[in-house]
Structure formats: C-alpha cells, structure tokens
Image 1 (tube, rainbow, N blue to C red):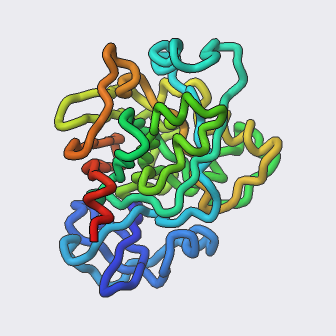
Image 2: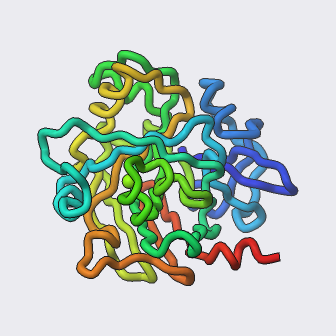
Image 3: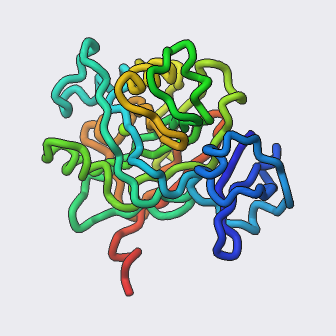
Length: 284
Ligand code: MG
C-alpha cells in the first residue's frame, strides 16, 4: 500500500494511492503519525484525481529529528575519505540528528541559503519509518517494527558540515529535508528490501546504487539503535547515501539556485525538487 499525506482546502489528510497512482483515496486520518500510532489498517474512502490535491511530505513535521546514518555505503565511504575524519570499515556506525522544522514536499523548493552557503549538496537516501515502539529489538524481529519506507534527500551544507564540529547546523537548515512522495508499507517489499536508488541533477545521473549494498541494513540499524534508544512510531531513519554526491567529484559538483534534484527509489517513486534562492522565497 502506498500512503500519502495531502492537502485539500487547507486541511491535511492521509490518502491511499491507487495502483496507477492517478487517484488518491481519502482516509479518516488527519495525519500520518495518527495513522501509524493507531496500529490500524486504513480504509479507502472517497477517490479524487491526484491533480486535485497537493501532495505533502508523508510526515510533514516529524515529532523528533530524523535519525541519519553518516556513511553506510562502501563507495560513499571511499569518495568521502578525504573529507571525513574516519571512513574505515572497523569504525562503529555514525549517527546524527537531522533537524527538520518542516519536511519539503515533492516539487516544493529546497532553500539555497545563498547568504551562508555555496556548497549545496544532495544525498538520496532510503528512509525507514518506524511503526511501533522499539527497544531491545533483535535483528531477526526488526522488520516487525517497520511501518514502511520512503525517500529522504539529506540535503547538506558542506562548508558548515565540515567547518563545525557537529553536523547539526550543516544538515538541519530550514527547507533542507525533501521527503516523499509516499510511504510504501513494509509488506510490499522482500526482507531486506533490494531496491535501486538513484539521483539526478538537471537530468544528469549522479547516484546509482541499490539498498542491498547498505553496510548496516534495516535490521542491523534497528537492533543497534534500539539497544540504547527507544524508537517511536513515526520515527524516520535516513539510512545513508551511496556514491555520487556533489562532494565526490573533482572538482565538486555542488548545486545552485535553478538546479533541479531528483531522487528515485524503485517501488517507492520519485522525489524531485528545485533549488530556489532564499531571497526569492522570502522576498516581500
Ligand atoms: Mg546523509
């Protein structure tokens, strides 16, 4: 089942996408978090053409910061080796909180923050959405705690990421977390999911990998995190990005206002956003 959050006449609602993705059926839930916490299976109500509604990020305002994984594909570790302190294979998994005031909807602008940053980078990531409270979960049970999967673009302000001793500022800028277009429920994919993951900038293929190449997969991440941290329903884990980010090119291929970044994951969909200057977004 593909679930979306949409807006119609100023109200948010959770909907179920039709198989051809041309229609969305309303449900009784006003937010994805309400649905996930209910533990219920949503029933399809009135069907509308998808063009009649505004699709939002599936969880527009996460209750907590996104849990992001630092380096979780071998090829990205290699391209990052000159930029990050330690990308060696024996290092424990790096996690950081990605602050998100409001997740960016499919098609909506990524804010360029041109007054403070010129090294704007994209990171297509497979996002895990937790379905029920998880503490001390063994890897073999981990998929029972997954509600579904989405796409996260872990936008990064590289100069701030590397010039400050923590990632909070460089990863947590406003309008820096595109998410969507939907959540695909866990039962739709094999365990673990083996899905093509790609990104494009202005139509040029940049990242091209598969979630089966994650160093720490879904089960390992949930086991490791839940040894110490209670994962709540609706928590999003961004599992890291494969090689091909702007940083990995020589010279780097950073983005600028006017560029369009497109992230794709097989079976989930397409998340495409333009980069727009802050001055453009906020001019009166
Ligand atoms: Mg990332």
